[in-house]
Image 1 (spheres, helix red, strand yellow):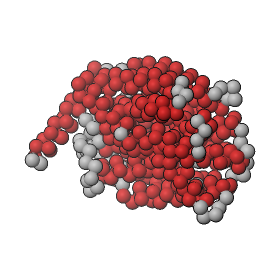
Image 2 (cartoon, helix red, strand yellow):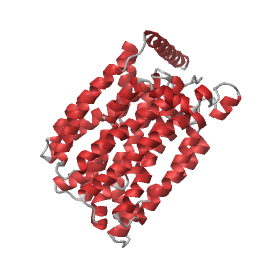
Image 3 (cartoon, rainbow, N blue to C red):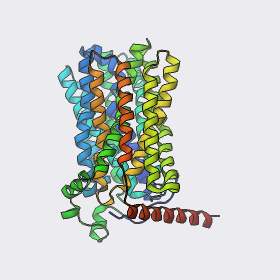
Image 4 (spheres, one colour):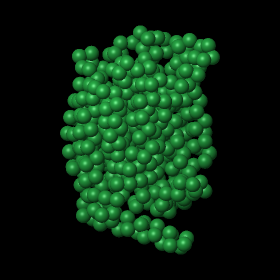
Length: 449
C-alpha cells in the first residue's frame, strides 16, 4: 500500500494536520485501553480476598487477560487494511467498554475469569495505533512516531497502577465497602473508553488524503479484495520468516511488559510488606517510563537507519533486546527495596526501547500487507505474556525464580532479531525514501526561517 502526503516531521501542537490528529488520538485511545485492560491489576489484592482466589487462579486470570488478545490482534490488523483504522478503533473502543463496566458483576472465579477474557480484546488497540501512525508518517520519522504513540499509550500501564487505587480509595471514602468499591471503580475506565471511541470516529481520518473508502472511490487505493483482500494479505505476511522472528522478539519485550504490569503491584505488596497504594505507586513507575523510553527506542531506530539503513534498525533492535534480558536477570535477584526499584527502572528503559525498536522495523517488512504484519507481530507480545503467565501461576516457583527464567528467555529471543534481513533492492529503495523525506524536512525548515 502506497499512501501519499505522509508527514516528514512530528509537529506535536499542530492539530490541524490529519497526521497529528491521528497521532494524538491513537496514543490517547491506547492509553485509555490500558485503564480498562489492566485497571483491575492494582486492585487484585482486594479482589483476591473478596472472591477467595488462589495464586493459581490469579495466574489463570492473568493469562486470560492477554490470551484472547493474541487472536484479536491477528484479526484487527487485516481489518484495518479493509475498513481503515478509524472505524476499527471506534468499534473496538465502544464494544470493549462493555465488559470493563460489567466485570463488577463477577461473584466467583469463573465469572471473573470470563470477564478478564472478554476485556483482553481491547489490547488489540495497539495494532491499530501502530497501523495508523505507520500510514501517516514518512520513513525518516516513522520509527519515532510509532514508538512515541505506542509509548505514550503504554504509559497507561503506569498511570493505571497509580490512579486505580486512588479511585478505589475515593469510592471507599463515600462509605462503600471494599467488596463493592473495586466493582464501582471499574465503571470509570469503561465510561471513558466508550466516549473515546465516539471521539475517534468524529475527529480522525484513515490516511493523510482521506478515509480508505474515499481513497478507493478515487482509485488512489486498491479495493480490499482479491490479492489485496484480508485473506491474501494475511497469507503474504504469514509466509515471511522475518515476521515470525519479530513475533518472537516482540513476545520477549512487550509480552514481558504486560506480565510485569499484571504482577508488579502484588509482587511489591507481598515481597516488601507495603500498603496497596504504595505498591501500586512503585509498580506504576515501571509503566511511567513509557513517557520517554519507547520514544527513545524509535529515535535510535531512525538514527541507526540514517547511518546504516535498515540493517542499522535491526542491529539496534538486537542491542536493546540483549540489554533488556541482562537487566531482567539483575532485577530478579534484588532483595532490597531501593535496589529493586532502581534496577526495575533500568530494565523498564530497555524493555520499552526494544518495543520501539521492533516497530521501527515493522513498517518496512511488507508495505502491501502492513496490517497483517503489524497484527502478527503485535500478537506476539500477547503470546509472550501468555507463555510468561505460566511461570507465575505455578505454586512451585517464586516470583523471583520466574523473573530469572524469563530473563534467560529474553536473551535467547534477542538472537531472533538477527534473522531479519532485507534484499539489496529494498535497502536501496528505503535509503532513497529516507533521504528524500529528510531532504523535504530540511527544505521546509529552511523556508520557515
